[in-house]
Length: 275
Image (cartoon, rainbow, N blue to C red):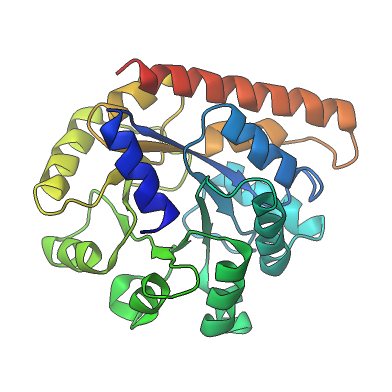
């Protein structure tokens, strides 16, 4: 059983929902990321989604796309982001880490080498937005059946997913299903809770895999509403936006942005714990 699977089992036994914050590796500068991961845990994160910076992030809105640009400009790569997870694991061996990115860097590194690096660093799950299940081949199975450190392959479902593709995602996905709550990119505002609830009920009628909702969650109210129908909520843009315009070497501005980010974490945690 992976760390993610263990986490959801424990949450279910406690009648709790998962809070999954997203941050971009290397933003506002690479030296901040590991300590920020620990802060997220201290402020209620059950699982952490760590963005791998990429120059052409098709699923991301401006907030996260700009965060990736800042991280790349400050020297963060896919490989250095994985090393941040390795550093985090020196003192935290229980909080699952999901890395989210795009396929091009993996193609360059090589699938097997990338998987080996993730496993040795303590990565628990991989989400590649532009690697759909029909094109993934044996990659998901090979990740999940590793003997050293099994890794979950996370896939996306959205409001426009056809039943045939939904069945394929359910078959290939492990850990949890990432349901995209809106028709758009990260940070989108057009959130329809009733429609999301209807879609999640359909998915949960077809699988026991936990379903977590991301895209469009902005505050405690929306987190509570979606947490009531899902197994967890994923929040990215509302956290990442705090580092917009912050200079990489401005310690006071970084500290202020960090405090605002963690205050939002406290709001989200309190909201979903009140369900």
